[in-house]
Image (cartoon, rainbow, N blue to C red; front, side, top):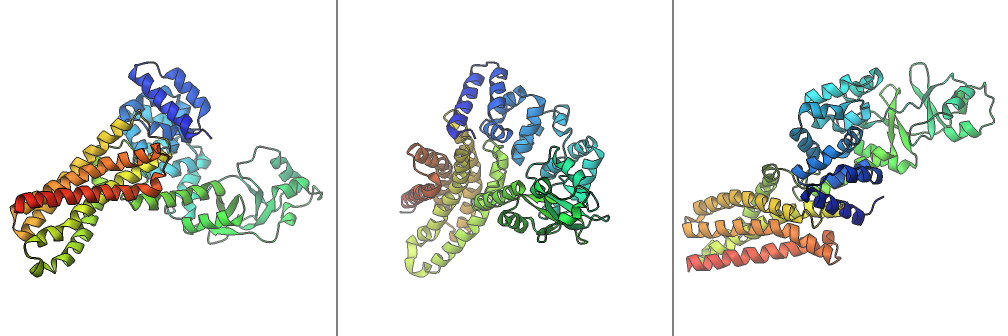
Length: 451
């Protein structure tokens, strides 16, 4: 595993080569030899799309395909949208069913059709079979490694199979009858070390207890079972007991990690597939929904404060609206904070790309700031019929969301420099910044306009 320090070096070195307009091919070749495709995918996501395409073009076709399969959804879309179809088609050649299933939901039909047309007949059949299941069912995620042996097969024949290259995480053969019904498992180690008669049927070596997964079972519960089983994989069967595939430990952990990451990011209004350099309008639209949801809860809190309007008299308007200012800044900042902490954890953010990230997040803050400041100012005017109060809250909300977006970048960045975990303390500092700025801006403007 390459350290984040080394990955940071690669990012800064590539940035320098691009700035100097030098040929990237020799250096990219070194990266191909040093990093895995997953690590290269993470590295590429640290660059804006223009620079990313320059680096992407320097990789050979085989490496591009491997990287493409490891990318996040939005990163794949950015590559596909930036390239002509003729340049993209090689990415979908000779894929197996498992690989295409991982990305098919994100692809246009023309790419899916092309990928299927380039498959072998066997892989094409496996793909179509898996497509019959929903994305949250085991059948959609199962592997199709060929570890199935007929019950009548002799031990000697199975030993010959063992001498060949087996799929990763292979520890058992699945024994089936003539109708493909699973009869049980036989450990590969038992076949190799057994002193059994070579003419003995493999079915006679079946061990008693084994666990299976139903093909329609929930994938998240199934992943937990695989992880808890202590085995490399669990067999997957259909309602008739027929073997359809297996769910491996690697896939189980990928599903589990994806579930955890999704929950963490969604708590901040971010999707797990959002790219550091995704389109400003795309990022704005995705986050605007959560700002709107937050606005509803903020107005609910303000409504309760407003119940005391009769006694608070003139200052009641400021008191009622203060939570909205703080809340809108807080949720906007937390969205950026979540995205930046992930980027720091993956080693994607360096001195070389920090300015571009700050600029992108500032633009997102300006767009959402204008949108929601206008909505809140209009509601405030309809509520209190005071144009100066509406102007005060418009300026305060706009400023607070812009400050929150910038703080969402600078707070975790600064904490990382100070060797403090931003995941633990970033939200506290961010909330403090947005609350203090929001209250000072709103109350200061309120005092200026209303007194």
